[in-house]
Image 1: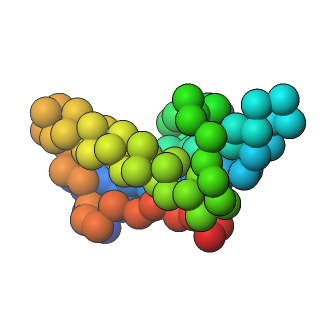
Image 2 (image 1 turned 135 degrees about the horizontal axis):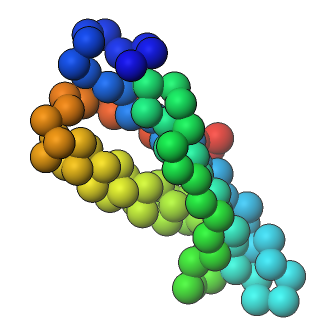
Length: 95
């Protein structure tokens, strides 16, 4: 694939962002993320957590924890398909 360092290795990158207390009715944050495999978008999502964050930092870390777990799942799925994943995996946040 495109930007990997070898023909058998792919690079996983996940961009994330959270908007603290974006929902004025519930004061819950709204988060979004995009998953790139070798620089190509293959998945994206926008979610509202079930709890209210008490700060912007908390909102960002909540989405980071969820995305980190999802990156591990994607890495494990690719490995089961005999696709090597370039380490380290990247998670890019704005804060």
